[in-house]
Image (cartoon, rainbow, N blue to C red; front, side, top):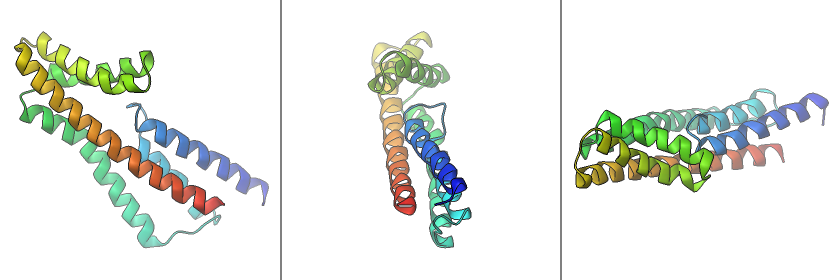
Length: 161
């Protein structure tokens, strides 16, 4: 194995690890980083994937990324969440990550959404309902992103071994 191949594998491995972390930490784009890792080993010739494989995973990545932004907002709005509730959820996720990782992300989203709704002047029952909807939608997308990232990491590892 040549030196540049080792460097590509190390860089791809870092992208794969960051991709998985990015499924939980909202500041990193999880699955796209895993996709970049696949592209690294594909275009350098370490392992060549089929064009169909690369296109399918690109499309899945795009769909998951769009749903990651749309589904929690749609779920929250469907159950009456305000912008303050949605922002509270995001802020709660970030704070939860730093103070109580990794479960703080999930609980932070719920607590933040409820707090945002209460700040917006909603009744406790309305705040809980909107907060729970935001929480469930965020959780669904977190699991979907994590599943996609783990699958792509599997193909990365399989491609370099």
